Amino acid sequence: MKPNLRSSLAAFLLALTGSTQADVANPNTDWFSQAKYGVFIHFLPAGEAGLKQVGQFDVKALAGQLEEMGAGYLVLTLGQNSGYFNSPNAAYEGRTGYAPGERCATRDLPRDLSQALQPKGIRLMLYLPCQTPNQDRRAQAAFGLTQGAQDQPIDLVFAEKWSAVIQEWADRYGDKVSGWWFDGGYEHIRFNDAIADRYAAAVKHGNPKAIVTFNPGVKVMRWTKAEDYTAGELNEPRQVIPAERWLQGSQWHALTYLGDTWGRRNTRFSDEQWVEWGRKVAARRGVFTLDMGPNYDPAAGPVGQLASAQVKQVKAIQAALRQETNAAMPKRLKRAESFFGIHFDFHAGPTATRLAGTRRRRWWKGSSRRRIPTTSRLTARGIPACRAIRRKRAIRRRDSSAIRCACGARPPPGTGWPSTCTIPASGIPRPSAGIRTGPQSTPTARPTRTPPRSSAPTRTVC
Image 1 (cartoon, rainbow, N blue to C red):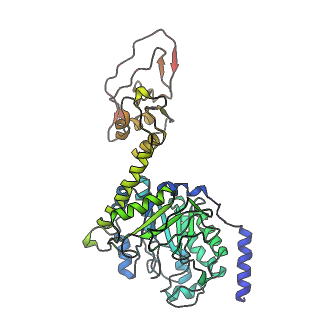
Image 2: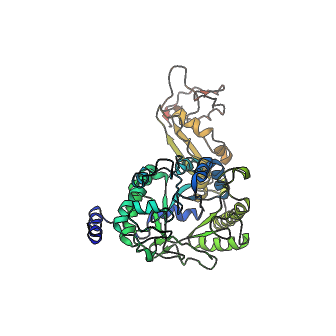
Image 3: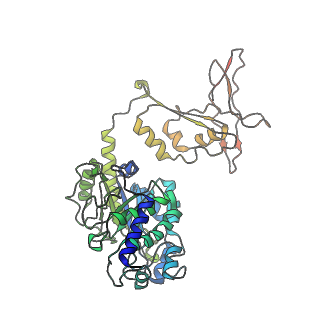
């Protein structure tokens, strides 16, 4: 089949599947804007030694550093030019003929990272070039590209093949990956909207809410109709400031490096210079991503851990942005001066044992700060849920005198946990503070005060 006929057929198939043009001012970028900043790491294995380093990568150490810096997300490279990848991919191995573990790591690093990041409220994004590794001639030939150590011209025929590789990863990770950053979407390799549509469709097949961008080079611009945010690669970022959140419908975003170039572990600007730029970008609801150098040497510390000098700089940005956020909030009233509070009402069935188990301290504090309540009340239908909430230290620290659980007493033996509690209409007794949990989920209770008997009518309160 002639090349022009193949391209026409690919375009026809793309038309049948429908366009994946991104919404202008896509609300799926809201979390991205609220995050304000994140971290990018070039972790690029090369050769067998590099694949071994993938297996040594300490995801918990990195996740702890990201939480300490207040990063809202992490961008991880799947691979780049060398031809080695941080995750297995059968579609890539099937087309190139490489055996499992020969070019694609047997460890699924993005999966392990997402499991470490998700409990901390940190999202994961992935980086991938718009074509096969340019230093792997075998891969270039297998995907029908010209062979040579540089980016090659691509078309829709190639894009169909490469999108199968993208989609395998996207389908595997689903909503565990919140966004993608595609590199090398240059005009001189004939990258266009049709190819961007095809890649975006592959990404959103796995997660329809994933956000995507394509890098046109060192600039901040809206490059394709399929993008949700700007790629924004910058070498000298300090004079580049957004006018507002949106740039022709794309979320404004910039990507730059903390070291003297990509992947380095040193610093090139002072804390004050980074803080000044970060404040200006965040004030206009832009987003910025900072490239930081991961450790490769197990003798120097955990593999994947970030340099302490760079961590210090990001923490300075975090403190400055947090200070501005707090300064913009109204003064918190005392309870006697208040007129507004929040009541969290959780209902659990008889099988629920960890209804509030995923509600972290950050969530409670964030919810209360955004709404400025001066009292917080918690009730739960079902003792297991009530117990799960009350055992949270963060909640007890939040306002122990204002937090109540309407059903606090343990039922008589053999009666099971009640779905409602009947309390005299004269008032709701304060539940015992002695309800706690041991190693197992079965609660133990200290002696509780029994409300005085009353002939008054009763009411169901939870």
